[in-house]
Length: 466
Ligand SMILES: Cc1ncc(COP(=O)(O)O)c(C=O)c1O
Image 1 (cartoon, rainbow, N blue to C red):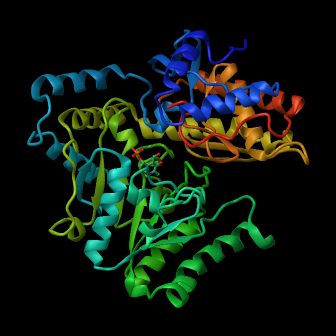
Image 2 (image 1 turned 180 degrees about the horizontal axis):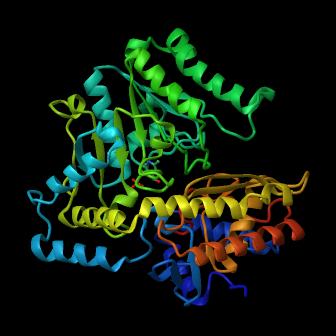
Image 3 (image 1 turned 180 degrees about the vertical axis):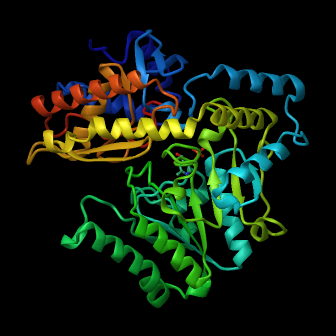
């Protein structure tokens, strides 16, 4: 089976969007250029409907969903109980700021936070807003100027979150002046490590950079407010840090009295097989940012949890836009957490993660084009490398992702030379394995066929055509 993508209806709609949507003209130009040279345009589709483990495009082609609304549908697509809870909240409150649901939800979240050490919560609409709110909170609480973030990290698309993100040097072009309070440190990658270091040496170097390089040569320690880290770096390449690194960060924060902010927007609420990714590392941050899964895949809900004294009484750190913590968003989150408990969702994610890791464990040795398989629970990525002189790594990954899509499996390949997969935490076991079988077929095909430099236009970040 191989879908020809985009299908007729998806293509028609994409064409309608070309003159109106961001990057529409770019996509048109790039597609024309590649087809003019006899190459295939990137496979693309638009979702016509979604249910459980699957999505269907406008042309009714069915796909196993490893994309999950960009890791945002923890219980599969359109979970009926969450939809019902959201409808009930809409019927009862419509939109009100002063509704009662924030309080029981904040109580529940306090119970779930690592070591129950972060009892206060402030609501925001999106992960972007929540990270910005956490940064503001850290600066106001410590009365210091600097935030340390990491290479390849992604924290959102607001002005502040763009400044702390660093997955691409072009990202902050023309905005350099706004990033005066941001220091970027190296993230401990496990591939393409510089200067012939092994992974452990590189992690030690990354910690040295934080503990010695910054305070001794960049800014005084007493002017750094916080280290902001993704404990499992997702958008920028599915990098899974070692225990020594996360524990090292906690130790350095304690030593210099810096706050540790864990951005768990993507890794949180079961994605990695623990409720919070920091729990794998036995580390408790001072501030934790949550989003994505909290929506149950239905209605946005995000926010910031913090230690009592940080979020308890700080009039300078204002937060919360009009739609932060809507009745429907809170209802979605409460129902989601109820189902997590009732159905053992986090344990299930851990078991599925193990199954998937086993299924992919020999890909690195069997396929030359596979770099590393990197997983933590259902935070899953496979990096690819091009055979010598044939094409750039990124295009190999893009080809694998496209071959997957044509076989009916929807995964992500955007900025990095890898394919990322975020299946629902309750995905049917057989569907997960079937998706991985088809992924292996796709890898096999790309390895056999090869690709040529320039086959594919590079993509802007995000969803092409939108
Ligand atoms: C780690 C992380 N932080 C923050 C965000 C931004 O969240 P949102 O897109 O909901 O604004 C994302 C989004 O992908 C993310 O992965």
